[in-house]
Length: 193
Image (cartoon, rainbow, N blue to C red; front, side, top):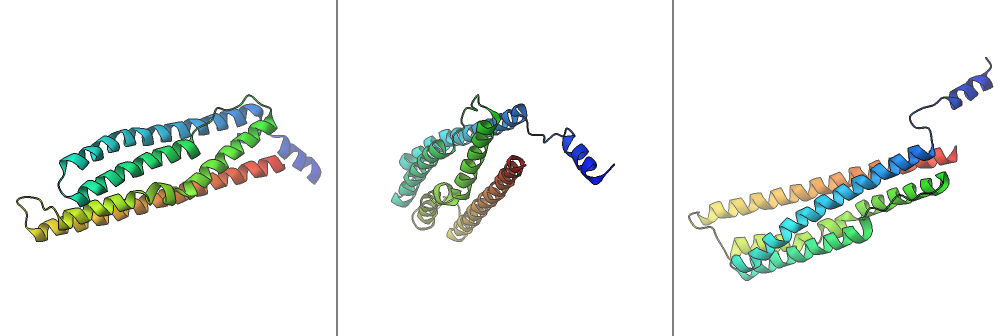
């Protein structure tokens, strides 16, 4: 066999990544299903956080803790609104291969861009409320039965844990955006062939 014959044979082989209408539809549908599941988890978390921190506004002492709790409720409501507006799943259209490929690529780009900017709309809005609650615990309200030094150590530990959680969330978002970018690049390579 000559080199051009080998290339033709290699290109004609069926692989798992062969671009077919059904393959694209399955991948697009699976991606939209993951987006729906992610959003559902976020909505369920918000359905827990909002009433709990709303209760804190009335039950916990000190204006700093109350204000921090209220700011956290507002931040979570903003996050849910932003997630719904920018990151909702879409119905996979009944379209031809080119339109379906374009739909899937746009969906990947949309989610990638949303994840890349998540530090602004997902992490940053929660910081003022959490910080104010910790400051309120530090200056206005100490736990009964604990020394102030011990209580302050617990508050510092909670602040460190909060920073680590925010850092992990940011890292997961960076990894997620990179993963989506690789999928976008793979789609671009497939459509160029």
